[in-house]
Length: 248
Length: 153
Image 1: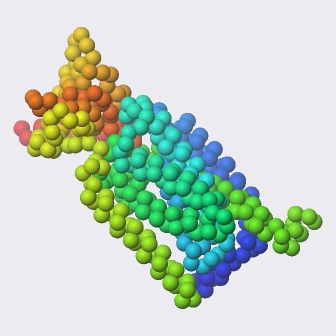
Image 2 (image 1 turned 60 degrees about the vertical axis):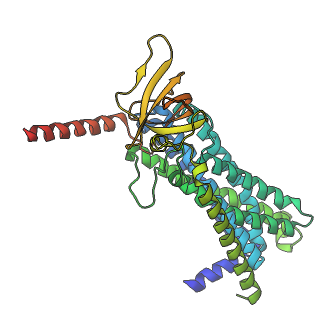
Image 3 (image 1 turned 45 degrees about the horizontal axis):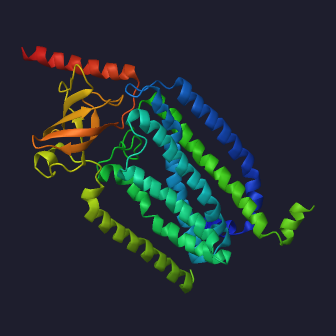
């Protein structure tokens, strides 16, 4: 098992291997994304019952929660990729960190935006400076910082290094976002989905949400793979294997 | 792992642990300032200065809401299960405002220990359920209560 993982790890470092193997994954990931998104949204928007208190406005949860989860997961992946780059100097890891940053920032923006839309009718305000909302806004700024640092240096390598360090420092924000609703009094409600307890949501509402979360992960993987392939082609454009693909 | 890589790995672990500890201590020392609102217990204990704008939060006490006949002024009590605070508010209450529901109000405490709110926000909890389930739950609760009371006699 360990040997197999080690071999996989070394292979992932090879741009050519990654480019060739992911070509087969793309159609499957795309199909799962489309099917999952359609199923989840149809079930969530048309078939799930309305909430007893919020009525239909709760349905924004099917976009808001997956986007918020992904924004945090993506940041963790970006920081880990950055650490791999700093320790092993693996170029692939730097490229992956580079492509994750704008995707994660996009999900973060979607989460903040849908949250504001939901907050207006539910809470009575678009925005409030409570711990959850503020730490999520900080996450967006951390994404912006990472993206800016990646481009800010004269050499691409030192930009990636600086961005990786910022991502690792920013990692501290992730548990703060997660536990902000438990540590402090916030307007944002505590988590509905818990790892250790039963979710406090009716199954008819819960199943579409779980479908949407899994689908968003698959969609994220698809986006990262597509953009990493572009990075590979650009950085390896002088290599013979890329020339063979582009100019057959 | 080569010694050089090991060194870098340890350096990164120290970086993350160090920043984590620093931020953790900072958060701990600021923990009171990060709270969005004060609880009724804190207000009853006199932790809140008069005339300073603060937020107060709690559950609206069932049966405490009184609306004025000729204006938007409403008065209600909030509780955290321990102490109660009276809040007055001149404005439109949010849709989700209900007795028994959590709210957060921004305003000032006056000398009569009445909280004069300039903004009232409804707090939503983490429970989502269809109306029928809510009705069934309430009915079961009532049935249980009745059964309890009838058993007593």
